Length: 186
Image (cartoon, rainbow, N blue to C red):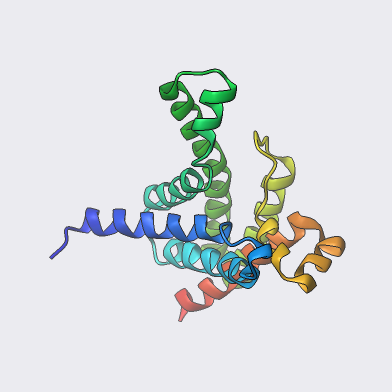
């Protein structure tokens, strides 16, 4: 039997791996639909864990792991272009992951509060508006947003012209929160 903390750690790392895989299937390879599928699946899994009372520390670890996997190239780039010692570049990269994860954690907190107060639809609205606000108003070292994962499919890429990439992010996170809230509420 696996101890509970090891199981939670494994869950967080697997969830972080799904996060990183969301942005690892470039459209030019013909696998663009996998990006879109994982861009919807990851928020569902994240919000499902949240609404089923997973500790926020594990979810924050999952977000940090996802960013660390996604930005694994940053320490080597900082070391080469910086020039920085590798240890300092690694710390700087982890600080970037921690900062970006903090914004998404705040989105999760707002959505959980709305879910407890008013149910699935308010949780979805809080998640959608929260992630759009974080991506538009938050300070970002690296210009990136969740809607970028949907560019692999032509009809979704064209919808970015109407909604914008933050609008697509809001759509993904709002739909993910709504679906997970319906699952959690029975």
